[in-house]
Length: 302
Image (cartoon, rainbow, N blue to C red):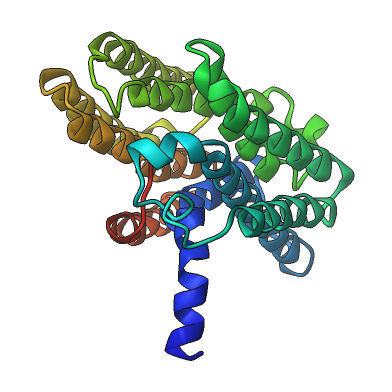
């Protein structure tokens, strides 16, 4: 690939926020662990389906991000004129086509696994577009809407097996709904600040998620000793960033807290992998963390 070709492609890569996409892939891996396929894998059957689901979530998440910037174009012309669309590096028409291809590709990949997977992917696309256009502007529905996208993404990973075979384990998808709602609450005011109350509520939700995981371990639904180190890492990242954002309630500090919240989905998902799979798989997932941090320095996260 020539330098010119790369420079033509690079703005599209920036538009998809690669660091965020990796966290979405970690959702799928966590869902696979909950479904039990990481520790009992039929390579010939399961591996292709696992890859289809990973490609599916990459398309769905990237497509949702693209349409987020499309719907925010007029706001970004004022607040963030350096971004790809307001700066004119990609035309609005090309961005719409790019976003449509990503979303449709994500849905089609999921249908290659099963009808259930395809319907979940279709629902994720719907909620992503709903958030991009309307949800983000609503103080209550917005955080819930974004959380639904992540919860369904975890469920998409679980859908590699028949969901009816999981008994109540599909309820694990409620945990990312709560946490991502907390991240979205934190993002309120990342441009104007003055959102200490929202961040305090977000911290409460973080603690609720951690407590729920520990209770599940206490009742031996997951492996508690394996989970604890990963939960401590995840909670520590968020407590530190959010407490600082409360003390220094400034846009740059708030934005960093949101960034940490998104990236910390990897250790949160690693805790599910440790609890339902094995700590070796969880450590392997944590290897995504340095890559995500590196990409977050080069590409926007919020």
